[in-house]
Length: 67
Image 1 (cartoon, rainbow, N blue to C red):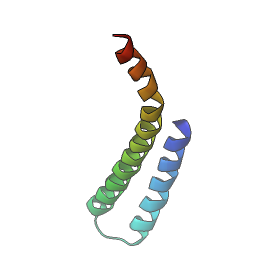
Image 2 (cartoon, helix red, strand yellow):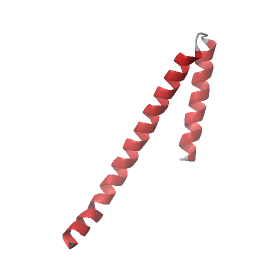
Image 3 (cartoon, one colour):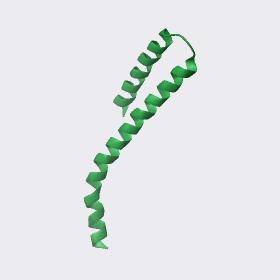
């Protein structure tokens, strides 16, 4: 998880510099940053749940069969 945080932080910093150089309001830049952050977090959650979910199914099937 630490690696993901550092990548997201680096991406956020670069995006902030790019949008800051363009000038304008900070609220628009913040909204874009937060929406991208939400997309990255959601993608990570879907990938993790998809991977772990497939590995957990046989264990739950054994428990149900034992009942």
